[in-house]
View (cartoon, rainbow, N blue to C red):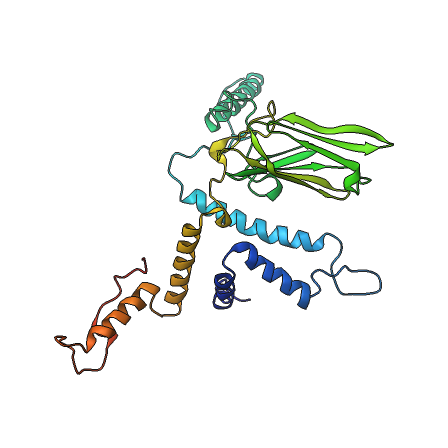
Length: 323
């Protein structure tokens, strides 16, 4: 089996050339579409392709694998003051020495119950303060930094928020759906037997930009509504009145494509410098300094005048590639 870094030298030039993660993945999936049977639907007459939903399952499985790895690494590097994970129950063996067997059983039972109650309080002291605290989902993209409930789930970044609302299998056309998006309210209605009925309606936790918000229908599966926030802030709930998530447990990182152009350019430069270092080549800044040294090497007054240019004569290891 190949190691994790075997294909870095092939993949990095693609990422660098495309300039962002979205276009990078677009090239990867375009290759799978053109050169493999990844997007071919398997049927009885052919052994090629994948069963319906299998391709998406593969992508989700691989994504979750590395997301779990990233979360574990993030938690291992976090500051010491970390909220402990709430425990549903704690089993602790209690030994009571007594000469009365009947009293033995009663005392052991009471001791175990007290131990369970004590552990629950120690594990999550905030739980009693906020009974509606909901665990933040970091694995499912549909509820990333949000929550999952019966019939719908929501996710968010610092700039926008998405809600996925399940629909019956007979809802296969946008003509069967009516979505009303207002600054602080959304309403989703479905058409059945020539009558409109409300599927989901509620007041939003914060104001949104109506003009920049959109919705799409995945036939027979869900309605996806993407709302752009008026202010860059984290929501503790999608609708007013629903259980609030713990904002201390969310992933506050900003996606690469949401960064400004200067930040993206800096990241590209840092990534390219790391790539050059792995190849044993000078970084961008080191190359610039070498060019300056080469230009001044044989000038009048130079102690190296008349000698062949030798970059090893100058230690460039202290130059980290920053500009």
